[in-house]
Image 1 (cartoon, chains in turn orange, red):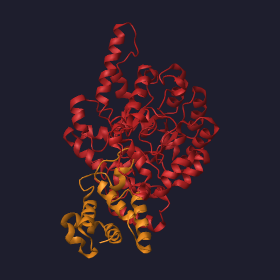
Image 2 (cartoon, chains in turn purple, blue):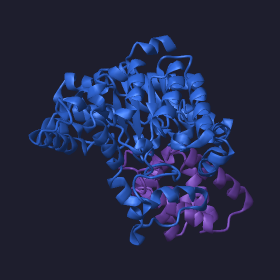
Image 3 (cartoon, rainbow over the protein chains, first blue to last red):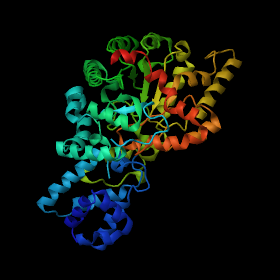
Image 4 (cartoon, rainbow over the protein chains, first blue to last red):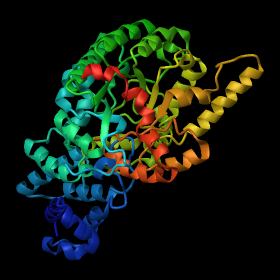
Length: 107
Length: 395
């Protein structure tokens, strides 16, 4: 029930298999992370973002197709984590995770 | 590499829009201190975290699913051998190559601008030198006809096949269809070089604000359409989002004006082998534009003036190519309006906005029109640009 847990869940969903599972079954697939309802809502919405969009991940935010909507959920989840308290290991991992998202236009 | 989906044309497809995704350090080196600042600040958060490990992981995933990794980590983002593997996977024979994002030095006046263009042109020429499948476009300013001619002569000597030009303003303060520009168009024609208008070259759609913009940014300034705060790690992208729906709906306007002025000024009729490419600005506007130009040409003829001896629609079919977005219903447009000689394929690879499978999606859309029309879209319409003999000499 912290931004740290939410960060761990988002990083874990870099695995497309888990992301697909979260998108399909929701909270059940995230039981290991101990998220509260609001956090579950953010993470599940992020998992489902872009599912119906042929644009690749953060490409939705590359010029000129901004902002097309689908990935607002992912952005909101990232913002929630950035505004919260993270331990140093998670902060380091999360910084690498968001940098990777930006560089590869994936997810 | 897992083969991509292809419309029975695997290995033959000609792609009018690809990008080399070098990082912020190369940007700084090529543009120089004065011009590089805003673009480096925009790009550095996206590229500075790219480690060999990240690139290796992304490469492995891209080999499994070419459409799943785009941007700076895409297969062949900057590595030539990997780019050729990516083209093999996608079924693309040749690809026109443009800068990572709209190039800030495209219309920069003065010696620093000229030097930045010269450095980019030298860099991209060397990058693509080992193969005739990667066809770079040089960047060419049109500050005045004499200077442009000098730059174009150097570009021609280097063996380029296309030049990207700015179109935010009337070049040299006059129409590109004015006879003063004919020496430039003649030189490009003589060297079988095409003219490229790409998104961002007129301001809107550029990654960072350009020195001049066709449309005043005030048109996009609508308080209730401003995007929400972005994560701190992606704050730079909010500036792009801020242009919003008005920008998105008017992306093509600068290119339409440039081409209108060029065509009604007679430049393409006087240079019937000169090709003009309009890239990444959609193509929904084309049919109404062609109809309007024909109407204008006919009405002026009634007053004794003849902007062209041919109808603009004939000139456009012969010499203008416009690339739709991957989600566009091109088949319906062709059924309704014709213009099957004009709409031409572009992947935008490896930009994410090009989509996961543009070839599969567009070929599915075009399938009901039959193999001949599909081949025209994916291969034949780009042949005058990417199939020219000079490419063989470059290899």
